Amino acid sequence: MADFTLVRPAGLALSTLVSAEGMRRLLGVTLLVGAYELVAQGSGNRLTPSLSVIGERLWFDLTSGTLWYHAQLTLFRGFTGLAIAVVAGIVIGILMARSRWVDAALQPLLGATYPIPRLALYPLLILILGLGAASKISLVAMECVYPMTLAAYAGARSVSKDQQWLTRNVGAGWWRTVRDVQIPAALPAILTGLRVASPIMLVVIIVTEMLGESRGLGFMIQQSRSFFEPEGVMAVIVVLGVLGFVLDRMIVALSRVLVFWERKVKL
Amino acid sequence: MKQTSPPADRSAKAAARQAPERVSRVVAVREWMLDQQWPVALTFTSVVVAVWQLVVDAGALPAYLLSPWAILAETYGMLESGELLPLVEVSMKREFSGFLLGAGLGVFAGLVAGVARWTGDVIDGAVSLLYPVPKIALLPIFAIWLGFSDTTRILVIALACFFPAYLNAQSATRSVDPHVVAVARNAESGKLRTIFQVLLPAALPRILVGVRTALALSFIMMFATEVIGAGAGAQAGLGGRTFAAGTNGDYDVLWAALLTIAVLGVTLDTTLRVLSARVTRGAAKEMASHG
Image 1 (tube, rainbow over the protein chains, first blue to last red):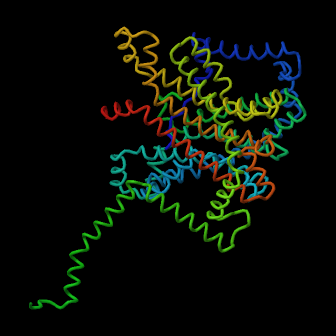
Image 2 (cartoon, rainbow over the protein chains, first blue to last red; image 1 turned 60 degrees about the vertical axis):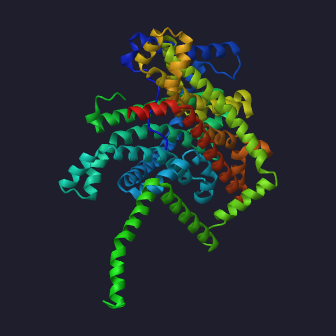
């Protein structure tokens, strides 16, 4: 079974920026961007557009409304798939935590199918559901349901024996135990699962849009590539990076509200 | 001998005497199945596969849904005809090169970042800038620079594998108990020796978690990079072949390629897990003795 720890870079939070550590991080960012800009200026061809050219393109895409048109579709499909995965993951995860039979039937299966890329099922999904939104949404849901299930399961299992006995002694039934004890107990883990699943959602939806689609951010990249406009590709890459970052921060903000009792844990 | 009770009564008594034993045996089997988990999972999977086979045999499904038996037969046929192995070779070469390059660099950079604070913070800054970008989005820009070549594919796979390997190695090295390092330094072990004999073994279990994530990612990226801008013939690789089969209506090829990818994924993951367990035997023992 895949273990469940979320590892990610410390990022560039404003609070750490003023420290010596923050300055060194900033130096890393500057070095990377600077190296690219040097190459771009030095090469003098269209292959590596300089930052200002990328910026101009980004501004153009933003103001002309193209970016919003495509991004809106990508986000709609992505979030629909993610929402399905969240609901399905929580249901399956909690059922696994509640019933030893479900646990025994599904846990080895989840472990065995985890290293198989669900993306390989996309051609099949196209046959079943067509090239439209349904196949893309299903693929996002199938890929994201793994981290969500594992998270909900791990979280619901964290209810201690004492808590379980207490719940039973005060006469809570099946549903009340799930609603009032297991879901709140699983919530921190579920939110961590969401932080794992959201970048996966972005990857899957982009890949499906790169294949036989005429809308969405993935299509925008492919179109710029076929028109031989590297600055167009770069502009969307920047947008995707910002999107990924904002998405993650949003989930962190959400967990501050939802799991207010876990304030001390640094996210 | 004198009969004390009618035979019917005796058998009922015998049944009553045996019942608790039989019940306890049923309970024992059930507990064993639930404990081991795999018998339940195996039964469940077998039932699903059998129902699938029966439904397909009944002709209730569209032509693109093949029965498990037909998929096995087609995979074997493709193996026999020599069509499958070249595809596997092409795909695996891309996947392994990308995985080894990306995970190797990632673990190395992670160790450096974990050991040397100053350099580590600089690397971390650069990493955090690229981290939120879906790595597959970089395929088109690499394709503009280098064409839809193997170099492009391998670079994109490597880039995707770098991040989990780096992040786990870095945080694993940073979270090694400083006392352990202090003891090593007090025992007058040199810098290099401390790194290789103390830090690395202590961080290894976590590092391998990252490597395993990278392996799973390399499979996804192999498929994605082969599907987007596929080559022709054997150069298509498993991903390109699967997708082309779907579009052309070669459903048997599609399923056979799917099965091959699944088998490869599970085999490589299991191999890595067994290897990791062997390499981190010491750490596992240590944990057990403490717990």
